[in-house]
Image (tube, rainbow, N blue to C red; front, side):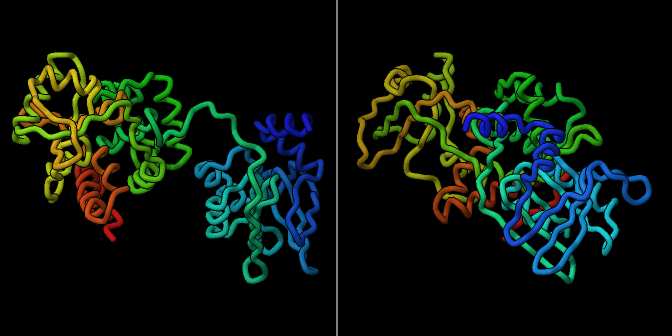
Length: 374
């Protein structure tokens, strides 16, 4: 048991995968897989990591295979280009081999007409006009060691978000500088690691500076991974002040105390889209709500009945990132507002679409008609 676990953990290099292949670890239901050769010359000087014969239902086909330790979109794309250049259908067909193929990666391969196998029992075999075999659902036995948490979630997501503020940078230091300027204090080493992952996911390119190449995909990733901030203290109540005076007093008090205050994304949306104001004016703050109300000289009764003020105490860096202001009152970044709204009800989702469109238009180099306005 321990030996198997150790083998799984050591799956870090292409040479490790080749050893597994030689030991007969490739398998797919209803097929017979034979390794004909490794590191073999093919075509005009190309060298395939593996030559594989695959039999199913009396049929046999040969594949030239590229072995990769990772199955990121970028690694898959590079491997597909390599094996397509080496394959010579109908004598040989292209294939890639990796430790694990997720369903999304299998679909990418199928759509590109490239076969793929992993060491977990998942795979897709594509031979035009002859066969299509797809096997998925086997768990990943070779998870990568998590050197960095999910880059689309938590504080790390600020690096991804910065590309929705500015889509092109000359250097990594320029990204680091803009993050700091907008209140996103992320260490330089983390910025570099996130950029590498964004490049692996084909979200950015470093071919000409550092630039965003898939805004829609980036926004989908941020949406899929969004988690609301952790609220450590909440106050909801009613006061007799107008919305404008309430905002002004709280902003002055927070500034005087050295704390942070921000209208929530939902409370900020009327400044970003056609949207009727919510009856409750909701704020994020780093101070204790009671002390902030006292410093602002606001007499508010805690109640849920006809409440018109809400204070949500949190230190989550995401909600204070990229602040905007109007008449001295800070409101949320369009990115934060969009993320809060897109997981809401239908009215909020409609507003989120307006905000999303505005974000993409503001990038300048992303055409409005390139977004999925459907």
